[in-house]
Image (cartoon, rainbow over all chains, first blue to last red; front, side, top):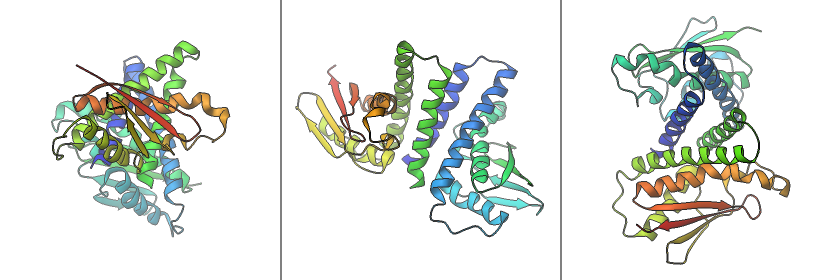
Length: 158
Length: 158
């Protein structure tokens, strides 16, 4: 319980620090999101490296995605992704019905505009993890109703 | 294993970001240490709040310190403090013979000067945790030989 809280608290300190140290405004917001994404990317790379040391090789792309949805998610959020869908052409949608990093925010719609900054780090983390496993990707996220959240992963073919 | 790595990676991203975003020099280094300490403080407060929800009340100061050495340390670093000493007058020395956040650094002496930035967050964290339990304190740390480390806690009387 407290393990999970440690990540949540650190994550929100990170956001606060990045937003406090930069200026405000649209452009700055974009830059901050990019910074968070980049930090997530590096953490994702490191984690997967450490995590897959004793894991057998993955069969295919889908197998890698299942690993992200199960093992990585459990390590980060103590729960699995609730639903994984794919078009079998390199697009995957990972749905988390109760995304931990959003659960601190109120469920109302008034905070919906703040959601992107709570998602950027995790998008980067997924992208970093996949990159470490040899898959280049673009990862985006959207919130329909808090605290549910969908991550869309588009695998880029070499 | 990976849970622990998550904290380590995030912690080192935090340090890198703070040091990259600020200028260099003695004064700046001091400011960065203060920032890290303050972030640790807030994370410590949050963690202890979450952590002690179902914990019975503490008997005394020593009981609180034991909780920090055992429960909090295990949550953060998957190990306990190796040695706790006190003068029974409000000073406690917590010795960790293999402090996780230093174990990424080489054991040589050439990195000893960088040690303070790897300790500041944890000093703040202990201070924040104690503060949440009603104890005001000053927490400092020193490294004798990597990766062993001593945290000194001085409880301030009200």
